Length: 136
Image (cartoon, rainbow, N blue to C red):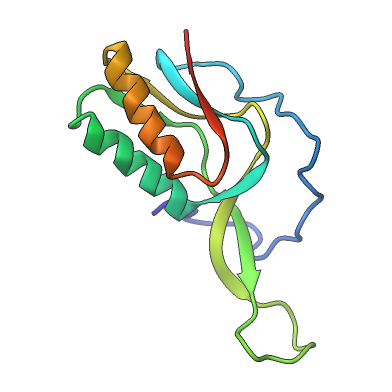
């Protein structure tokens, strides 16, 4: 799975709400001919990214080239169950990438249109947000 090798700060603060924000970076296809674009705001964790990547590579039978345009580097902490208030912040459970509307998540190249769109559609089913397939 995707996790950072080394981090400056082990635990982050939560940050602001993602509601009503649109992405300005990573909104155009840079590497491939086809891509999958987010239509909702959400946190996507490393397991979901890996599941989508596996769906693409399995469907394309390792043909073409796939680019993952997001990397989960935001640590999310959790307290153990049945622990009372106080005692500090919990330990890091997993890493997420906060996705905003318009962000390109995956790109693919070297395949025909039908195969690429079906592969990206299968990857979209693995993600917790609504997505659409875009092309150059």
